[in-house]
Length: 162
Image (cartoon, rainbow, N blue to C red; front, side, top):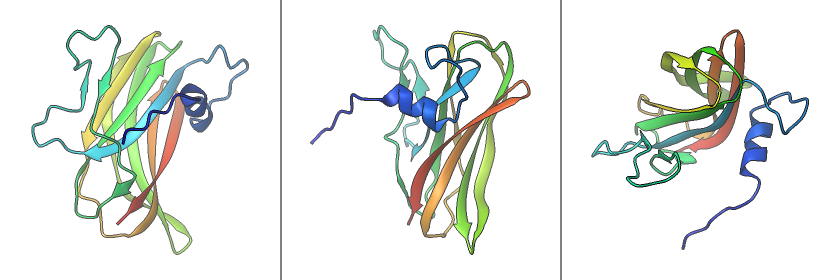
């Protein structure tokens, strides 16, 4: 069975990204639209930007995002963003964290892309093949961050490590 969700995606992204907006209709800077962990395609066909021939819209083609991450497996971490008004250099990164004995521990992290030219009206999709997930069962948090100029914006999603 296939489920299609048709409500509130953009509003949820803006809220989850923690953007301070004077007017919700006019966001400024860079907005993260998603951070996901997906299985690595053995054929290396996905992730890819605009991979659907003949599509009349920009598209991000990636493996189905996973909420359950299995220890010992490798995943493709994909961060997508939209630039509304910023001109300059951007950097994307991710962190996978977990609270252990009351302290937040970074299980893995990496710079997805160190530097790229951001211009208003552009969309971005970058990915990184992470290390195998450590044997640390339980809830964890995947955090995607875009640094643009002197500003940073982050989005979190909750996952479970098995």
